[in-house]
Image 1 (spheres, rainbow, N blue to C red):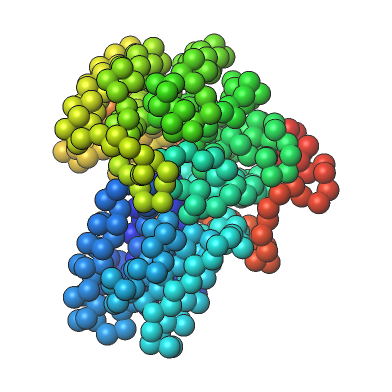
Image 2 (cartoon, rainbow, N blue to C red):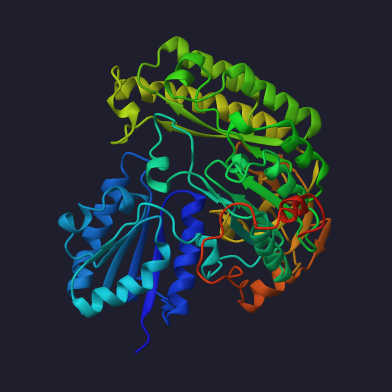
Length: 490
């Protein structure tokens, strides 16, 4: 009898990418996606461990699932992702109704572990300490007909004191350039218009095989992939962000004028405590160089408020850098200690009220800047890749939504045109709000695409090219394959 599944994904884009692989693995093993999530025979929770309440969210969800499982013989629950990697020994103890626990390094084992748990009638816990098979070599069930995630590396070699990711994802491992380009080319051949290159520290790509310009070469090579219209990447680190990457962004037409550059703090003293290997002057110099080469670049960032020991002077330094940086958008976070990180044991943990007040001041400043930036775009013509589910009020306003080339969210009125997700339109911005642009004066152009055809037909791109289950790390055996990244799509 065919069994159904559903996957709940929490956290970063890398988790979204991993969930697509989990879905592909399950469907390759004969499972089908549940039409209603409450009716699934298998529920997979792909967890995140970055935020303080991640544990509470997991165990709260497991608690809600317990009575459903008790009333449904044969139902299985699996927990994967970063929190599973961290809490491997406690999940089944706290929630004995869980059937499978697997980590970030053995995503490919999910179908086997589910079958083993059914056969043995006991929980199966399997956590590997190092990556054996790169997730991108596994089958995938892509969620989008028009945009795709492509992982170029996993893990991180940095030692930021607030971050638990390196201990859960491991040291950085790089995919071979030819393997990355094969996946990008396969997606484009299936009609995908946009890819986002993923890595915990994406611009450090190439460190494993000793090519410091590997990432800029990869960007340029993506420019030669036929049919690929947009290339994005996330997230870089200021330490490795170099002039060759900026040049590749500026000179490769399909690389979008968008950059996410995590600041974390504008205080040099706090940056030292965070073990961030740059200072505010270096950070601002990078932004100046980017804008010198790409004047219309939309730059976003991450900022942590209330790091242990942060003084009012430190916080004002952050406000000063934000004012000078003119971010299009900032993802702001109140510091929360994560067990296992050095920062969790630092003295001078700040009172919640102090952190909250500073957080509100930062948000108010960034809201003003974002609004000013978006108001400056009023009257501008922008190209929009139409998407699904971006606007909460789209059904009420009869608008559709999508992303401009610089990543800004655009809500637009399509009129009577039969516009589909995956199509490309141009519109004139009528109003700039703090978090989006509005274009209600109709379409200036509408291009139907293969991605729109695929969305309308309910089809999705195929999985990544798969090998024999062996890791595809490091430089390919023949050296020319790395050099080929700077030429036509090798």
